[in-house]
Length: 296
View 1 (tube, rainbow, N blue to C red):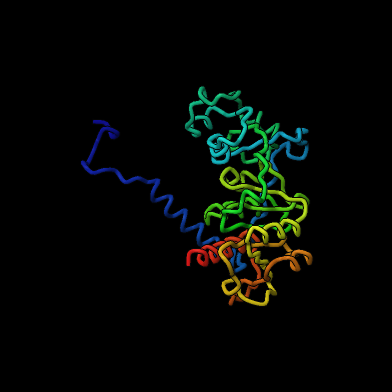
View 2: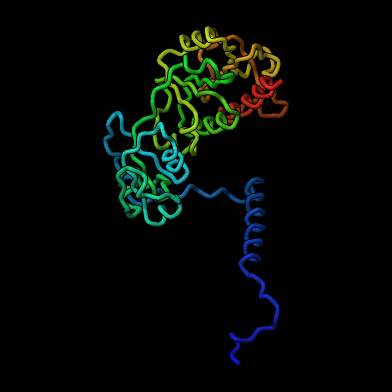
């Protein structure tokens, strides 16, 4: 009997599991050495070929390209999202787990580089791109029955805003409100960072933040601005049965006019050596505290 036919009656050990275990140990050891400064942190990977030459296509004002499996799947499931055309690779189509024939929109099976031409070679599109129209415009008046809102004062980074949206959905906030200037518009980058949350919560852009805060006051909201120098801890500042948390931009924080307009200023007490957090992390903590207050 040949060697490959022989069997001892015992299941052969899976060598891949053992290899993965030791690979994880080596990675953890290497990361610990980097944290101690014993070995250098690797340089960022080189830009993909063609990244320097790529220029984004001109988009119409009502044209939005969404990408990424989770983002596109959420958009396809959103009845308020007007879908125009789906471009997808054969592999990505299988992972989307949808019946493309019943979508009711134009679609095409394409190779990955065709999507790269539209989104750029650095976009992590996972083989799927959806052309859509922007979501319908929402008004503040429609939020009068929401007990918790999140207001952003010129937070410019779409990755931060996307992460904030995820936290806002997780804690059941009624909307994320931002300024039209110095804030990201609805885009593929914002939607990818939000990982589906853009389809689940209103993203309202207003022209004048002070006026919007005044309107929220009329709707019964206590507006609380987060400030590292706030006079009191956040958990002792809540009042009423409707709360709108207001967070400032990365670095600059709340603008002076905003500070003067909110109902109260508050701080996140941090006993550790670091006294400031990324705005998306601060938003998650503030939302958690607000939800605890509203449930009490």
